[in-house]
Image 1 (cartoon, rainbow, N blue to C red):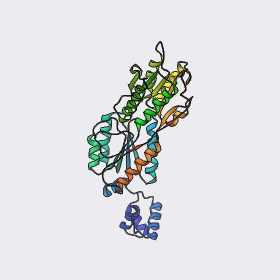
Image 2: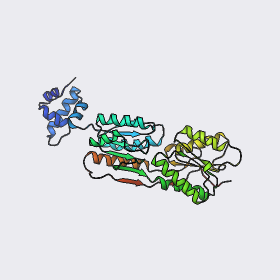
Image 3: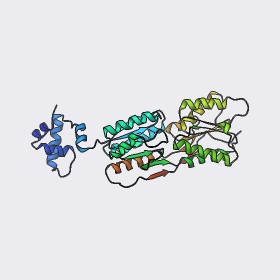
Image 4: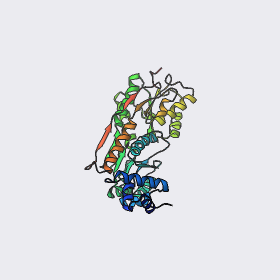
Length: 336
């Protein structure tokens, strides 16, 4: 295996010159750079990134910790983050916590030991910052919290206005004339689910259309959505004419159950989701949903993290809240 000394000898330069070329340092003459790069290619020389990261106290790696890799919203968010990071020469490590606070803590402790250059975190729960996160901050690794806010964290955070999105969704069903509206959402243990739920209930209550017997809270998983939709749509008597789903995954699950039970959407049942993941527009019918600016949120988060990493932005953290929009598809209509 070729060494840095082999490259220096073949290029006819010093080891220090090879090091400056490999580290893309300024002040290297063009001819020297060409000679070193050619020698490295001819010898098949690959720099020891682990050793270099220890020396420079930099790894050129960003970590992205997400709560559920099976929920299409989070991979779509990560894709935007990775696009920006890759364009700036950074690799991205993906860690999936399964919405488990203990697993999240293990990952954060691991990342603190590995000394990543920065962290993009979508918290598993609304809790005080765990010890691993505090350790990363103490080491000087910038952290940006994305999509969900974290109690007690005063660093950079970027999310959508989930309360406004919930109001838009509930108002849409009210304006269509629905009076018997069910809600399927996650337990209020994250800022996203809590703010959406507060908006759903406040908006329906103000219109005199909140029926707490039709409020079902659990998780954002497909299985929970299926089980709960089947429970709501299989009872005797008047069925709900609409379902407010706290995510597109829950809305898609409810749509599948409706098809299985022979209910026509939107003639017999209107369904509205939240997120506007790509899959939501492939459904039959395409979902009405609250659209998050997912890629924009990812881009802003990655840009902000990289600016902190490079020292281009200092000072206290900031909280950015982006605006959602209502995308009216074909899954909602007037009750019949």
